[in-house]
Every structure is written in structure tokens, then in C-alpha cells.
Image (cartoon, one colour):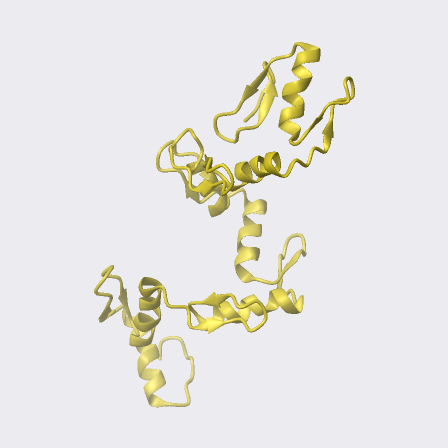
Length: 212
């Protein structure tokens, strides 16, 4: 009577009507979140138990919900069903499209609760929170020398120092180093220029050069 949606079974109609009343009688005992339908509560409980019953038979990755697995399968088939209505770029996952849309709107919904800086993507906020500016947490550990880092990319750069892969060459003395940042530091011995490290992203810049 409200939205004119039709159902084959009376029980389905009854459940649907509850979505219009706003009544949510099914309450999670852990986080106290309430749900209209019992089935929604049962699915929600999986987020607390960590159970992931839906498994991809191709890559063996597991998911909490069936619709997550269904969307994940698109990454294997190459199908991209979700299209941006602005630039027409297509995505396999709806969440990827949602994140992409923020590049058009300029919206940055993920805010750092310490410095109030905002980000368009949750992974960018996570990376920011692990910066030296806000935390001393170093969850990424080198298995070789046990040195720890706050970010995965910092660990990746460090690992090259153990593999002895030296791909960056000084054009003056032909010295080889493993990392581009080390080459920049080495070049200072020839140019006399000083480099300053950003305390957020660890990039190095000539002193006086602007970096945001």
C-alpha cells in the first residue's frame, strides 16, 4: 500500500512492510546494532565471528557474504558491469566504482581523527594513520634483519637492500645502489644539495621545494 511493490507470498509482504515501519526488533548482542529482519542479523553476526563460508574455487579467497563472492568472481572473468556515468570507465566491482566516483565529486569522506585531514579512499587514510606523524606502530617486519616499518612500501624498498639488486647507477662515478632514494642521497655528495624527508610519506625533496 505504500510503495506498490508486489510479492508472490504473504510472508514476503509481511517482512517487506517492516522496512517501512522503522521497527528493528532484531538486536545484535555484541555491538547492539538493530535489524528489521532476522536474516539480516544472522548475516551481520558473521562480521563478529570472522566466519567466511563463501570460497572462490579459483584463487581460494574466502568471503563473509555470497554477494561478495559473486562480485569477486568478476575479477576472474574480466567482466566489468559497473560503468561511471561521467567518464564511462568500467569496473568489475561496485565498490571500485563507488571509490572512483569520488575522483569526480572531490568528496573526501574518510577523516583522520587526529589532524582532521580527509581522504577519498580508506586505504589512503590507513596509510596516513601509520605515518610517523601519528603513530609509532611498525607492523611490517623484515624477516631477514627483523627491522620494522610503519608502511608496506617502506618494507618493500628495504628488502631490495638484502637481495643485492642494484639497478640505480650514478652517472658520475658509475656507483650502483639498490634504491632510487639512496641514489639521490649519493648524488648529494657530488652536487652539494641537501634533501629533506617528508615525515608523512617519507619522500625526499630538495630543501625549498614545496610538497603537500
